[in-house]
Image (cartoon, rainbow, N blue to C red; front, top):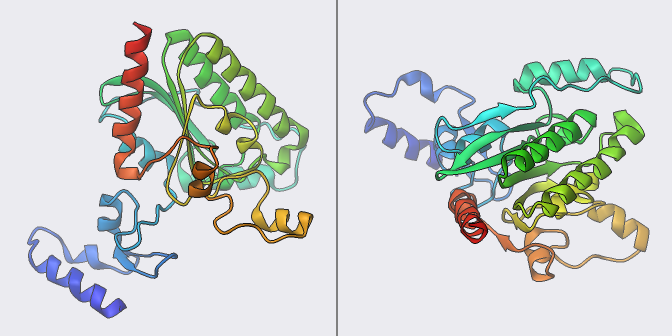
Length: 284
């Protein structure tokens, strides 16, 4: 029960004399929407945004993801300052983007850069579901393409963490064009014999799934992530049939050969670095 959780944390508080009373203010709790567990937020973040009780992997901001994956102090952002030009003059779009930028403190739905993962130099792109649900517009497509081109230029592997609701409707066909643009960049990376690891997180859907997300040399996924093109309800309404249990979850996709491995968040950094080391040694 909630009161039991509060009592547990209060007992821990008594054993930590340096923690101020302000740390226990309202808003310091997270409720797991999968099992109902109440978790002290600080401990929740220490556990990498994973529920202690049921193992649910919550969505992460790009900032927290980079902090978890990149060696401390090694991340250098690239492709900064790239923002959408609102090509269709979609009503309210620019204002919405400005509000999101202020709220999230990021420029767009993807952050790109170069870092080291357990000492292995790597290009990394991390999508952020807090920014228009990670939707892909012209700026997102451009930033990812630049990251891929930087990997080619420096002969480095690239890791892309995907989370997206798909193409950004406010940019119409220009948004859809990013599917071809990013896929073409991946093809050039492949011609150079460079490694691309795609990591699918909850949710990875729409045009992102239909382009660069599923083009990795190795495709990893977090547990119980929703991965697909159209959503389950849309498919059921279209085909008029009930879908199998767990359809479009990462476990279902692994069983049917669409992804290579499911990796828990606590093991992600080590798994990525090991794959990169294997590939680097093969190229030498």
